[in-house]
Length: 164
Ligand SMILES: Cc1cc2nc3c(=O)[nH]c(=O)nc-3n(C[C@H](O)[C@H](O)[C@H](O)COP(=O)(O)O)c2cc1C
Figure: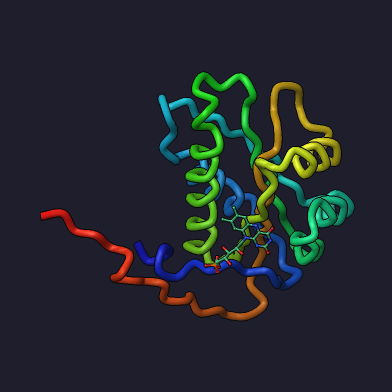
């Protein structure tokens, strides 16, 4: 899959909006992820309101760049998921799928960690007035990349262990 070997974190975007079709494709990819017990713990908020994006950009000291993004997804998980110990692992698979689809669409995206930090989760939950039964997991800023960025080659044969 080309996107795996092309995706990088993109933190600077043009002003161009992300289309409704592109948003749906990214969410379809996010919801196609594997999950423990097939529990699918995810729900997503799609934020294009500039004022809310600005507030979310203050959620942590590492999220400031996202104030200029045309779109921010808030990946959330259901608190009543049947296998709670796997929820954040499932969420990670979902967010990675979303990032890869963003790359496939020619968009740039960056994951911003919120869970498992309770203070960050509460902050995001309050800003979006989150639905009962959900909590925030991550923010994902998305937009049209301001410039092309090369992926780093991180392949390291020393980290591979064969048992023959
Ligand atoms: C769990 C997680 C949390 C992250 N949080 C942030 C963040 O808060 N701010 C940010 O700019 N990048 C964040 N990143 C992106 C990483 O910095 C980035 O993936 C890493 O530097 C590798 O670069 P690459 O994505 O371009 O391969 C996060 C990535 C992950 C997986």
